Length: 251
Ligand code: SF4
Ligand code: SF4
Image (cartoon, rainbow, N blue to C red; front, side):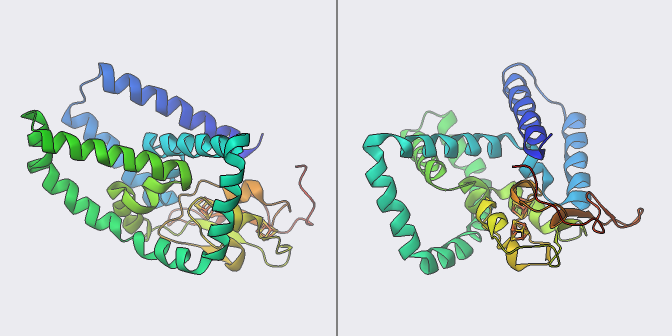
């Protein structure tokens, strides 16, 4: 079974459980501490795998992006979609730079959230119109971003992802590319929702890599791209063995 089936199943189950928990469950501090320990533990071992496989916000933004692509396929939108893609191609350099620097915004957003807890959320509680309107504008902005950009929330806003990304620097696990078998088709880079140029690296240890394995799934050559698991108590291990002859995957 392809990795994406496991990933989608995991995300669907966690997403439904999260909705159930929001409606019916009042978590206590011990529960929160266990969840926090699990998230930190998995981050140390497998980078921000929490973001790629578990986080309901990530799933929500994947759904928004899927919706955005479907809307772009409607015949009335097709012309607009083609112009949008052309515009992206034409401004690729500027957009890449904007994308790179916008990611630092997550840290500023983290501070903004902290102050909102004291000011903004208090004003919502008091039914202050200004507080409610700013949250509504923020939600509309997020939905629009999510329709057009892969994982927009994770890249530019999520304070949890920003924090876990820093912790993930301690992890030695990452995506490894075998340059002997790689055919330089660039499919891995094109598939990466976090815009990582996987095809140009031998090892992806980026702060933004969510270990989602979409790049591994997209790679048409067996053993060219794999998850390399490296952590202190175990021997370096690979999900796929490197010494096999490369063969085309059945895609
Ligand atoms: S490099 Fe691969 S595993 Fe990491 S975020 Fe991109 S697609 Fe996912
Ligand atoms: S998808 Fe696989 S074969 Fe293509 S560039 Fe990436 S690693 Fe190489």
